[in-house]
Amino acid sequence: MDLKKVFIIFGFLIALMWGANNLNKAANKLQYEKYNEIVTAKVVDLPLCNKSNMIIVEYQEKRYSTPVSKMECIHKKHSIGSLLQVEYNPSLDEMVNGGYTGAYRLWIAFLIFIGGVFLSYVFIGRKK
Image (cartoon, rainbow, N blue to C red; front, top):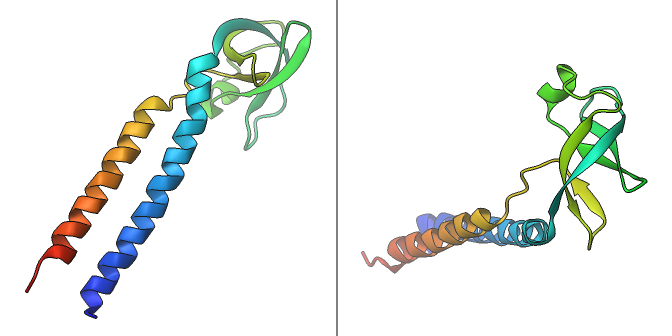
């Protein structure tokens, strides 16, 4: 077998695994888009800015930790007692701070997968 074909097959398998992993992640995030409700939660604790940049909010007398951007944390955009618009998923009892997107990622992953299959076909299917 030609070394070029081995590299193409290896690249295709890596792209296939990457695409399958992204499809799985996107499918998991679809539940956020489908079931989330936008609610107003009260900020009750502001841990130090670090790698996670999580703040603690309270909604219906229950506490949740939700991520904020590093810039929001550094510039102290939120203060204890302030209100924050967050997305709440009652079926998972989880809260996220905006912008979980999954549907368009399904299409991107699908197009990359189809492109990988097409390019593999073009390069492997070509006869010398």
